[in-house]
Image 1 (cartoon, helix red, strand yellow):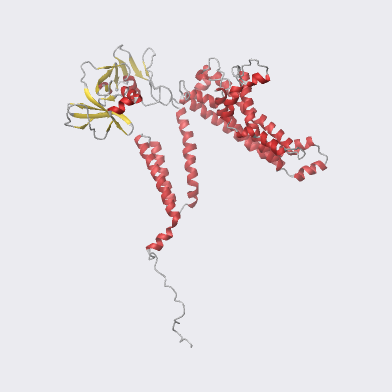
Image 2 (cartoon, rainbow, N blue to C red):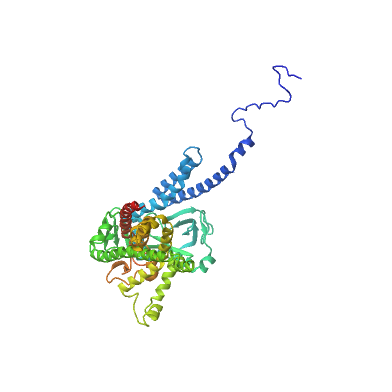
Length: 541
């Protein structure tokens, strides 16, 4: 039966009407978000949580630069990942953030420290230096009252709470006493608003806590000359004053017992007229003094010159000799006529599988002059002082590093040899080129093209190879008269370690940072020049 024109058949599919934008059911719109959005929301929630935690920590420490950078990075991350624009930044931002935090920031902070006197005796502000000076020669004030006292804690920081005629006052070394409650009964405070009381049992059972409490000083007021509350038994406290008196207007500290006046100097120390100085100073900007000291102080320049020459020799030999050995073994074991090549290759790369620090410790014992197996097995029990003689120590540590690194070049050169074009070598052989000529004119240039970037990076690594030097003999033997315990096998990176005082001794972070900047510049310049020169090898391809 025909359908009249202008009518719609009952069997014809109806065309769905287009719904206006935004009128989709809520369930459909929610399903459209997808699991990807939920995962992104969860990840960004974690990122924001850690970001806010870092921001609050920076604000509490008054590190305004870190606070500003943290806020900026967090805002950028939220904008990038919660908008549909700037799609490339969604992939670039994590790498850029880590580059900024772990590379740019560290280099910038090291450069900042290099222009300061930051180190032993100069680690804080002038206010902290004044507090440390006033703590010297402290004595209890004659006739001072004895206050019932409780040990309190807040945010991991210890403090005191005293009962001053019914007024509960609490404070910490960085926060002077202030009234936190009134109308309390006599005796030690049993409840301190905003603080947690450390129980007597906990105090008596922890000797480290007892020592910390005995050394604890809580200022009575904002004026350091008013003294501090101290305790000897953890239950009562009294006011103690120092023989030192601080004059903020004149910027002087006066020793009332001797009458000596110490003036604040531009070098960040309190210095008397006779040249004596208080042991604790503060951090100040010293300009290029640290850099100039490296070149103008004879006691520093001569040992560092020896260390620098040895560093270059160490870095060059640690690349050239292992590379030559690795290439030699690769050429030998690349010959198809050699039987058992796989087993021999495995044996030759075993040193590369051992942790470097463990190998250095083992060789340290083997090179021992009294009971080391090197002297016993190879020199008939002779008492050769491998670790005590400067040149023998250098040879020994270089031998250890070569033993550790040649398997790496063996693997690299083996891969490079197996990738050489066979037709080129065959054509050279047909033209009459012998094995020596092929090695000199074809094999070696093509191998260098493939390995030159690795050699440059290996030079930079060897230039800063702290592990082997430190674990083998800690840079010894010592250079006579050298400051900061510099040794004959120290390279610049281990010298920086010694100067920084991390392992003990007098710390000079400013000088160590200045030397770090110079090492960075030297390695960067040498690497840049080397990369430019490697381009000349490409003509062999």
